[in-house]
Amino acid sequence: MTSLRIEQIPVLRDNYVYLLRDEQEGACAAVDPSLATPVLTALARLGWRLTHVLNTHHHHDHTGGNLELKQATGCTIVGHRRDAARIPGIDLAVDDGGEVALGGVRAQVMDVSGHTLGHIAYWFASEQALFCGDTLFSLGCGRLFEGTPALMWASLKKLRALPNETRVYCGHEYTESNARFALTLDAHNPVLLRRAAEVQGLREGGLPTVPSLLASEKAANPFLRADDPGLLAAARLDGLDPVAAFAEIRRRKDVF
Image (cartoon, rainbow, N blue to C red; front, side, top):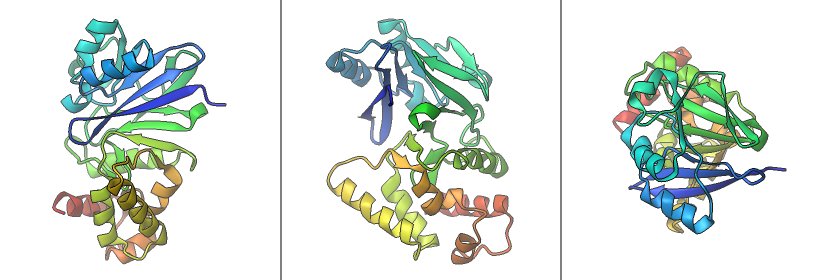
């Protein structure tokens, strides 16, 4: 039985901040708080006390609320050791393979660099919940601002290896646009077609498309399938190795 309650807070144009609370012990984290005020408002509404901030990477739309939240609550700010100089207010620097305790619930730290260097994901195995920032999106992945295609592909393969039941909590609501692009590569994929229709319905109803299920991402997200012969044939990428295929898919998305 899960003890982690998750609240999803839409902020800015298309960001998500997540509040996680261990219901047994009361520890509470904000994942990638771009703004402090919506987080403080949600905390007051829920009657929760913030104990941690979990940052996936240094970009301001994921860390902009750090210092105000720390001043207001005294919370502990967590980020990658490699990125410590760029995480405002960092208290706890973690490495790939390490753990972060949120009360009685533990998250494994995974280095998933590529979008940036020093990007991490938090994998709560007991809760089947993954907080992956801007590395993996529903039906997409992050732009390569600092990493190489080889590095990003290696990171995505790490995430792809997690259990199918994993719920993917990513940093942005990009799924509708990602679906349109994915269909240009793989127009006859039945899983993708079902997901695209579902996404359209959710967005027309003003509802989020996140979290998604990793099983669906493995079957429909082209960025997780750069070694899938079916996708390579459909996208006219036959003969390319996975890194080259991934790089070309990412290039096409960048100009989509």
